[in-house]
Image (tube, rainbow, N blue to C red; front, side, top):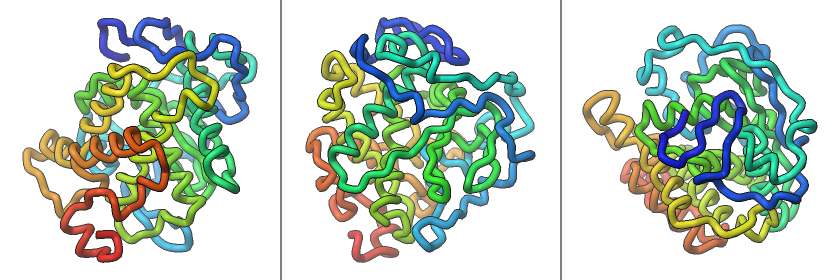
Length: 315
């Protein structure tokens, strides 16, 4: 559930309402084939240890690409055994539910369809040879090309099957566990970040040997999409400063320094995997202000001292 005071309060794909939400064009057609809703228990058996974090991407071993630090997420809220058990959620036929932008203004799952359509519409126009990636909605756990995943992993992109995986309960955690304000555009930022990883995968840029610059570039790509989203034809009007602030707030909430301070009481820059709160905010702002993917080159993004030393070519 999200913050009160005008923010949409969605639960299990329910009504979104229009107050505080991004405004889709009512008559724009949605392509629901880009999103699959698996519901609960989408296969894969027990959780196979994603916090080990290593997958094969681009021919080499890279850190698991996720928005949130999976290494500490299990410590925030008690890991896989604590907290409330996930309620069983049935799968749904999104093609029947999500037909137009009006549906995206009323349902969380249809909003995801609209956001994914807009993001991929932008990258298809911008990037020669862009291949669409499907978003998989699941609840609790799901099988993936990178192994079995549970909701504790948070949103992530799997290079092996080129899918984005998202448990919608994460957006409640973004507020309750990470202190983000939440809101529809914060959710759009999360999705755009993961599709930034898909773009990196298509460009062969995932295997750099360090995850921080990769994560910051994905934040920057999310900002680039936000700048150009109106031109994709899905939105009624440009995003407001308040909506952009939702993304900046979410980016700051999942900075390594803030997560480490909340979970361990200390900050260790040497162990950063996604970048500090300020780095993540700066990366999104850079993409939003510049509006061009070329301005998200790795050398132009702020890196930690450790990453610069490990990757001189990126400094």
